[in-house]
Image (cartoon, rainbow, N blue to C red; front, top):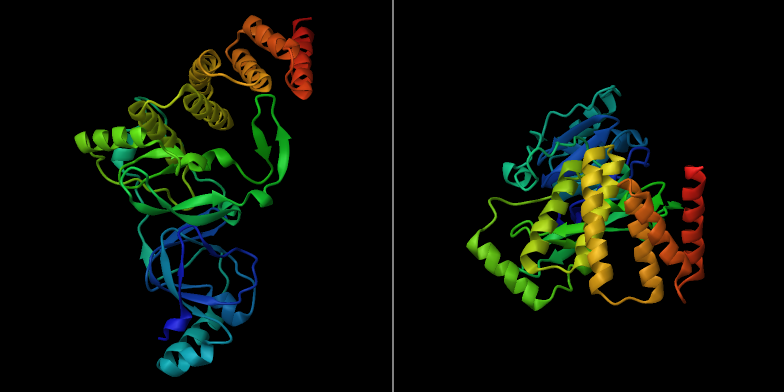
Length: 364
């Protein structure tokens, strides 16, 4: 088995997607791969052949294969198949091709080698959530894998290196901009990938700020972890489970509390949870999150200096949260402040004036 034909793939990589032309087959040597077709999902480990039927039949793949861990695989292509056959017992490759050509297309995913048991979420991670918090089933769409790429991250607190996901922003398709400044995309929900979490010490922080944590904050976290080490590890599934994404937000709250994060970080965290809970139609949780978000945005307004445009944005967000909480009077005052502020952004003034008109129209 020549090393030139053995490749490593980062966690989160799509080996191929359903409908892609089959230009290679993969023999899994190390790691785990999730295969998905419709609602069917299977976890595969070493010994599994991926894409063999489509490759040898020269057809398109009928399922998607995602690396759910770091993966090492023997990659068989038209160009190297003869070389691989020459260096391995010829009967192995011949038998593989014969079997692949004879396997009929079925309605079910059928694998006999390398099949793994489904992952069970760690109890330790579930305990991070508040008492009574529901368990949300499901994962983000498999198609999100095409809009993400893996990078190596390093925890600023414990130095652990781990695979983290970044978004291919250039591929996102803008759908609309909400009045509370939420950007909605047709093909992706970025709030499920807002945070990076160290798998070892559970340090959770926004992806864009992960490498820019103050030394004092790092020391506080190190002291807290030394006094009470995490019980287990935390690692996102591929594709990411909804429950794991929400758990990451509560891990970030624990991080923020320990390091003394400023109110603007708290405010943005809670606002994103509002959006997530609303998407999941978890009304009570969304209202509780809106209350917390409003409190922190109000603290941000009171304790941090901003430009006129920055204050306008804060007033608009506060107004939108007031509306969610049934406080029309407070909402009107915040929109009015944004619309009449000296200086500021003309577009934000118009947005605030539009919201005032909406309120007046609803009251008539």
